Length: 227
Image 1 (cartoon, rainbow, N blue to C red):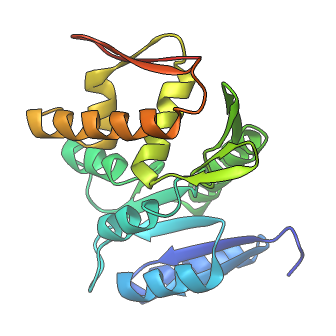
Image 2 (tube, rainbow, N blue to C red):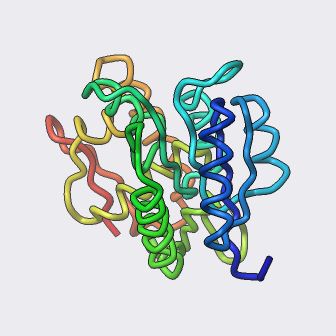
């Protein structure tokens, strides 16, 4: 394998399909780690640190949605494609809520899968130069989930990092409350709204070293990051 070989973790419990996909991808210079269930895939992810995940949704021991949700807790950036026989809108929505970037319905063509893999990897590559985002006198590294203040790192949780990322994208404009609740919490109910308020308070404390930074509550609409 060359230095530029893409490491791909494939979790698929149908042996014949898994082998076909593995061989097809390897013929195109991917390094493929085929896992027969979600538990093995979780362990393999930690061992090999792949560049992209292709996960079957319906797997024994741990389904693809659960696996993706767990991985998203520590890695907000890795691309995830779901493979599934399900096609109802609610299933597609659930896939995106659990951290999926794309969704491919079985049966699928290998060419379509490869096009989607490269599209996601190209998108990630374009974003790499933008992982360090200046916020006032802080430097925010979204990928590492970290703020830097005068060489001092301040670690963020996955949700703090995701929330700050969306605030920074809409800086000096209002981040819609309903949108971000559905995006990060999966529902805009009262309890999730209270939870988000707690996370906003935590972010304010972590950004307090720069008095020019404010996270303002725009009542009835959402929050605005001013810097």
